[in-house]
Length: 182
Image 1 (cartoon, rainbow, N blue to C red):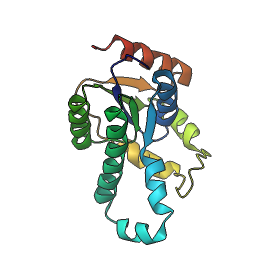
Image 2: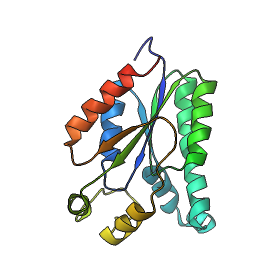
Image 3: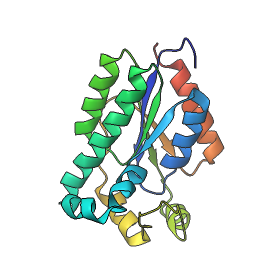
């Protein structure tokens, strides 16, 4: 949006709790680009000769994805545009992205998506098909394990529960972002 201070919005949380849906809605609302971990990493997986090199322990794979997301975010912030980061994040890259936003005088926000109703979370995940080229679909067993081991991010953030309809969570996020300090 012309004349607006750019935003770097980190949308994190549990798999299947509405992160990507929220990220897409926020991108549309704020004229932002979405940098999605799954989409970026799927590009590497699609290239066997590269993925063999990137076939690393999970923490190293995360670092590769975080670096790719950082480059997309920086490119957008350099041109005065906003960016939404869509992933299951950790505090380490969160602090890096906060510093990146600060370097470009952008506003930094964290939104965390959860689902307090385990049965609803399972139903949302079961049969879910995102159809990301070169990326895998998750089983409920993997999602449940991620739910159990998820580490909430520190610091100020908005927490949204997927028990609420996606439209309500998007409205709440937009209202919260618009009330955040300029």
